[in-house]
Image (cartoon, rainbow, N blue to C red; front, top):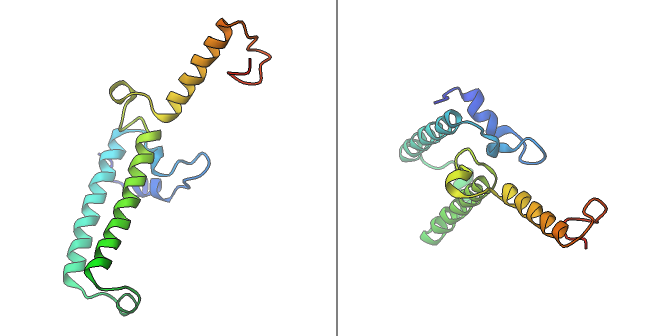
Amino acid sequence: PTLNPLIIFGYVLKSPFGGDGWIISVNNLEDLVGGHIWLGFLCIVGGIWHILTKPFAWARRALVWSGEAYLSYSLAALSGMGLTAAVFVWYNNTAYPSEFFGPTGPEASQSQAFTFLVRDQRLGANVASAQGPTGL
């Protein structure tokens, strides 16, 4: 696995917009496994940190300290991680290869467009001059 923090955290610091791809741009299993190792390490260190220290003064003043608040903070974190995982599954075929789990979103979209193109051509449409794959 890749344990070099410059490589692993380089994915996190990329832009999620445009062609950079953020963490979705991971393209080999070594980096994927290394990222999980780093994530596990940081979670353990963070847990130890929270056990040994009191919250900072600004956090004690700014945050609500009740069971409902803890639940809402946890649910917010889970929803963020769930969204990240869903986007990762949708676009990245390194962790979820198409051969095992079916096509990714972009692959399915391209194959669907090609299917419509073939269908329209068989129906007699001149696909070279059409407005789009379904422009009959």
